[in-house]
Length: 123
Image 1 (cartoon, helix red, strand yellow):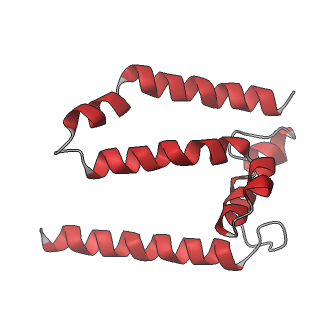
Image 2: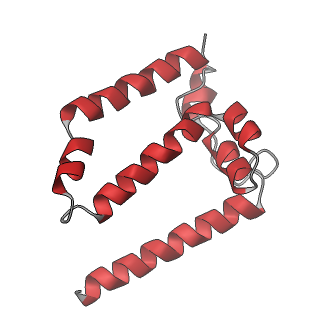
Image 3: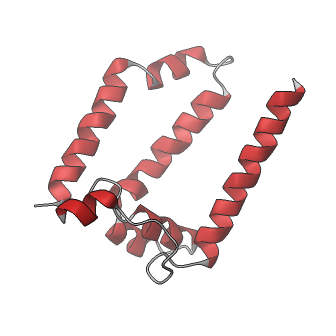
C-alpha cells in the first residue's frame, strides 16, 4: 500500500475515533458546541437529518428507543450504512455487490425514502 494512502487511512480513523468519543462523552441536547440545523433555524421545519446527533449519542449509550425517537431514519439506516461500508471494502472481491448498491435504482430509492421521511416527519 502506498504511504500516502496509509496516512490517509490513519488520519481518517483518528478523526472517526475522536468524533465517536465526543458524541459518547458529550450530550448534544445539553452541550452548545454541537452544530445546529440551519434548515430548521430558517424554516422551523425538521430536515431529514434533524436529531441525528442526539440519536447517535443515544445509540452509543445503547438507548435504541431514544435514538428512534430522535431520528428513526438513522436507526433504520444503520444496517444499510454498514452494508455500504462492507460493499466498499469488498469492492474488488465482490464487484456485483458494489455495482448493485451503487445502481441508479438503489440510489434513487434511497433518495425517495429520504424525501418521504422528510415529508412524514413534518406532518
